[in-house]
Image (cartoon, rainbow, N blue to C red; front, side):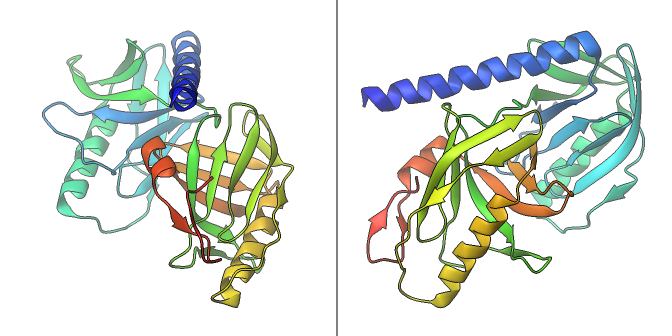
Length: 276
């Protein structure tokens, strides 16, 4: 129990320090090259699981409204800010509460005429100076985070979804080691990161799994895809791992600490075990 409490404390401290670094950067050099996650919209309770994000690049914002992904141009000088109408957006249909929240968020983004950093959060301000939305700084570090794989490159120039009934995981330790489940076997090793650059040095166990050849095929393709990773893109609850050429290698979604440590999974070898 003491070890688990100490581990959680180290993870939380690491996240707070990383978030502080993001905020300090935004305060000294504007919002460029920062990423934020929606924490509140006045008069509206946020929908659980519908994470909205906003990332500022050189002259474009990108993100998710909690339902669809978008990109749009923006201009900023000092604390002034103006985001144009989305130039591109996906067209997924989402339940009404999620769609309503997405609309409210995008209205806040496009109506913003200024911003300020207040107590570690980004506030989007309207023409009258009123707060349209508040967003929390997103830590840029992977240390102390746990992820579930949602898709992987199958080596045939296509990203395919994970087989039903299987769970592939990835946990980044503060000691710069990564470990996880490839669906049957486990893997572990060091990871090297520098900004958005990311590479792995991994080794996997070699047990055979029962049930279906597709599980072993998926595992092999996933491990090969891991070996091609060169760049990461972290945004809210989404993590994209890409090759040096920009091709998608693996897509992941964040697991909370309680979920990743408390849910057991079938290792397809007749045992039950918690994800690494």
